Amino acid sequence: MADHTTLQTVAYVLGALTTSGGIMGYARTKSLPSIIAGCAVGSLYTLGGYRIQNRKPYGIELCLLASVVLAGSAFPRAIRLRKPVPIVLSIISSIGLYTFGTALRQ
Image (cartoon, rainbow, N blue to C red; front, side):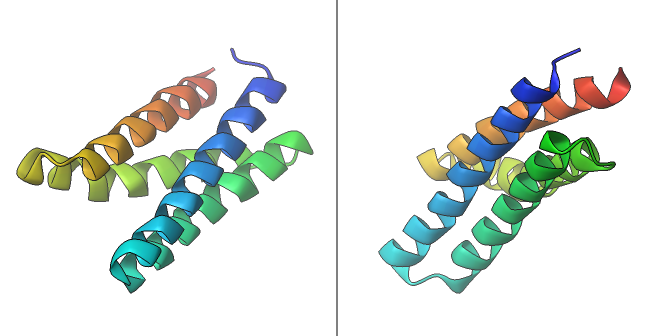
């Protein structure tokens, strides 16, 4: 099992990536869904990382939830559009699904 330090680091990195991606999406296209979804998913990752760091319950579950939400929106768009942004979001969600899914199983 990955230790708490690794899990919290992954959570914080994914939170920063998704939040900054939402902000960049808004800055580029003025898309409110981009900033809302990016900040919401980023907040789930960050809150999960905080809970993991402080050894509170449901940190891993929050991060896994963020990964499922991100995957649910990114994978269909990546398959349909084949554009870089949805593909990168799919990769990010895959990292989260693997990391936090494995941690939850153990």
